[in-house]
Image (cartoon, rainbow, N blue to C red; front, top):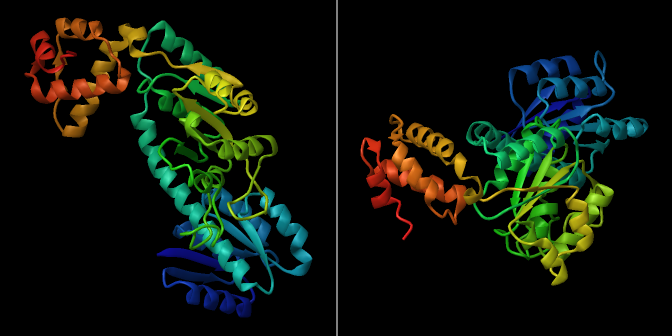
Length: 388
């Protein structure tokens, strides 16, 4: 059930808005406030998925209400309601963080589209916030080897800037972890971090996923939908496995980089976005460029900073620290005490050829904890972590 608050001093306008929203969906629970002060008090007491706020009101005008909401509940989308003479002010509220504005008297289609889009954005931001709470605990960059220390130092320097970063490395090396660290140490850390696995999305759907679509733009597009770029507005979008993105989608990403604008599939309306782009790939993009599979101009736009994540074989000295880290995490997940690994077992693990990198090591540690003894010995490693 979507919770919507209408802040409007004209009772007739409130009644119209409530009626429109009630007829649109039974899943909208609409509350009313007759002025800005009472609206702010309601927002302090309850989380709303969307606020519709008039601009000209007694006691506290809409601009002041918007500024207060952004301090109290910054993730709550606010749509401003403007009279004819308030249009310039309404446009200016967009710079202050308003999601959109609608004019009086409200046009039915315009109002409902704006409400749907704002609620879509809120859903994405809420989900991202939920995942981010896990991220801060689950994503740690473990290791003290020279190669990892260099990467940590680069992140410290690059994260506070808006420089675009291309992260390269093999599967399972931890490219996603580097992206999360870049975001969490950035000035955008309180804004959304939106991740898109370009390899996991069918080519015909990648544009809709990234840029959104309008109703009727293709079979199955039953309603307007915001894309990942809009969801990441003000924050960071991480394009994982970007080497698998279609050339058509690459062209649109390039435009977003050049102009900070996107267009939903099936629409010619420009939508401004303020997004930092991080990208990752396990492919050799220079070879992909030679094979006409990746745009050279996009590569140079993305690769302002290059971070190559080393394979686990290139940072074997970090294996004991990683094993200890994974053993503790697995114990917490299973509700057991962490098992210790003998020095001989760790020495043997350091000698293996880790083709699957850190991801493979994590799986092996879990297998050893489940199948091994109270203390993981060299014999346990030989029996249960065999690379043969």
